[in-house]
Amino acid sequence: MQTSKRYALIRAFSIRNYVGIILTALLVAVLLFPKGRLEKYLPESVDINTDLALAYYRALLRTNPSVDIYSTLVKSYIRIGRTKDAIEVVLQMERKYPNDPEILFLKYQLLKVEYFSVRDKEQKKRIKTEMEKLLSLYIKLKTDTGSLEKAFKEAESMDIPEIAYRTSTVLAERTGDLFWIEKAFYYSIAFKNYPLALKFVDVLVEKRGKAFLKDAIDLALLSGNLQKAFDYARTYYQELPPAERHSLIKRLIEAGLTTENYLSFREYMKKSFPLTPDERLYLEKEVMKRALWAKNYETLKRLILENLYLSQSLEYRIFLLELALGTGDPYFARDVAKRLHFGNN
Image 1 (tube, one colour):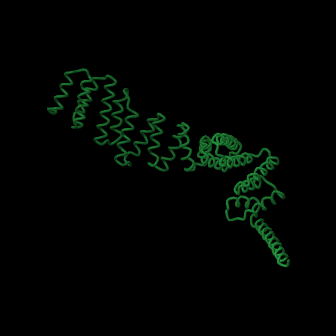
Image 2: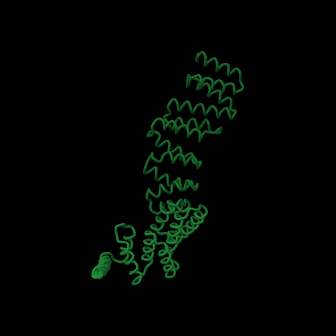
Image 3: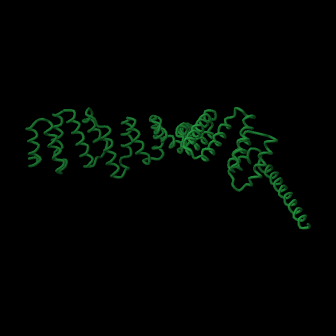
């Protein structure tokens, strides 16, 4: 009997002490952290006593409620898995602040918890659609930089590309930060907004140089802006390793050479780039092909004779003979064959 009484006294004393410690800590927290600061700090901390934090939030709600406190309390409940309590607080908040956009984001967070708790694919799809609607409405109403950054983070992590695209482009233009410019660049390409992507890649090439050169040229070619592609190529050609230079020249020829411009294009390439023998050979072969396709046989004959000894390989000789025969002039083809076999004399 005495033991039971002693145990009860010890337990009562421990509870009183525990409550006293919590209240004391709460008082210190209120003194050390002015309103609006502690509620922002606590949700990110894993070292703070959760019961103390929740007690602090509930006390603040009773004395001086605000959207931030409601929001922080909801996030705290979500973080510790008390979803029902979080829903109840959101409902209270909605009654008190019916038009506040933060309610949309908190509802999104609750749906996110539900999304990861279900396994059925169709149900997941429905939940995600609703999440996307809430997030889309949220960024329409909350256009400040912090809210857009928050929405982008969610959109990217949850694979909602349309919202990631919208927020990143606004943030890139608003802040000029290279992080957002790079994000906006890739999302603009994904959504085929090539003029906007070209605007972003101009900045990336200027700030980061050849690291973005290939992307810049790819985009310029993809959007049909050949002049910009050639401008980039001329600027950075000398900085590239030999293998990359050769690949770049081939891509430019394939993208820019046509049956209408082959002669002017040929001169432009020769003047714009210090072509290696292999690059020059590739250019001349492609130019002669275009002349054949254009049925400009007199020009083709001249080009064949100019390029007879550009290469001594068997493959190249056969190529020239086929072109010579393609002119429809057997005497010319015979002359080319003789020259290739016996030499220029």
